Each structure stands twice: as structure tokens, then as C-alpha cells.
Image 1: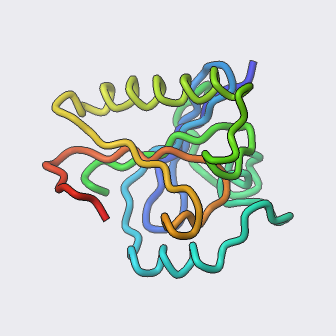
Image 2 (image 1 turned 120 degrees about the vertical axis):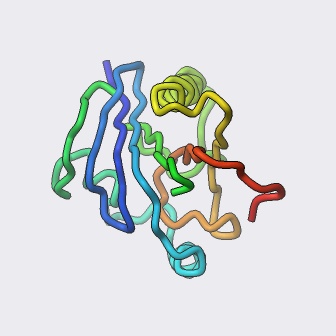
Image 3 (image 1 turned 45 degrees about the vertical axis):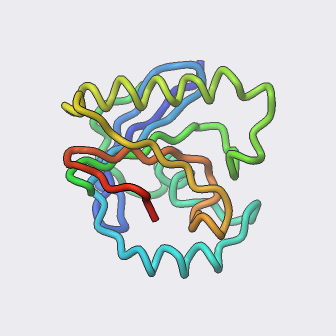
Length: 153
């Protein structure tokens, strides 16, 4: 049974990781402090399907130090839900990934509730360089803890 990982990330470096149990999902939790312009620049230079490991795969294989809080699974609250299966982009997910993708959404919902986001939160999946995807390993951003504005971006 594959699991999900919950990672707490600060600035650009992961600081704490929580993994959530389930059929092939992973989740990361953290307070974001990343410059949006820098992320766009990184997205423009990032290459999908590269041979180099992503920051997420390095955290998952423990080659990048991270403080593991729980294994099986900033707006003021910003965490990531990351599948252990390396799907580069949501647009490259296959029909066989249906159960995994649903599980990731449920992990996001359950963790948001545990983080006190009962009044609402936003889920974001960036797909490709025009959406500022800079890490080509599917992940869901969960943002909350304050009134979010519309439209985003």
C-alpha cells in the first residue's frame, strides 16, 4: 500500500514532513514564503520529465533532510499534497490514476479540517510553465487561514 506525504515547507526548503496513509498519495505541509516572480522564472526554465530528481522525490526518498512529523500520509496555512507516484503534470495523469487523484483530494480535505480551515480553503494545481509549475511532480497546494481574493493570479 502506497502512502501520502505531508510536508511542511518554509521559504524554499522543506522543514517538516507528514505522510498520510492511503492508496498511493503523499502530502506536504508548510508556510510558504516564496517570491511569486521567482517561481514564474523557475517555471519558465523547468523541464518536465527531466532525469534529475525533483525536490519532492528527494524528500520522499530521504536524500533531502526533512523533519518527519507523521508518516502514512503561507497564506497563514499552506501545505502541499504530493503523490508518491511520479506524475509530472495533472495533464499527464492516466485513467488508472483516478483512485489516487481522488485520494489526494480527500487527504487535502481531511488535513485542512485538522489544520482548522473549517471556514474554507483553496486547492491549486499548477500545470505547465504558463501556470508557473516549477516542480514537475504533481502536487496540490492547499491555502487558507484568511480571506482569499478572487480572481487568483
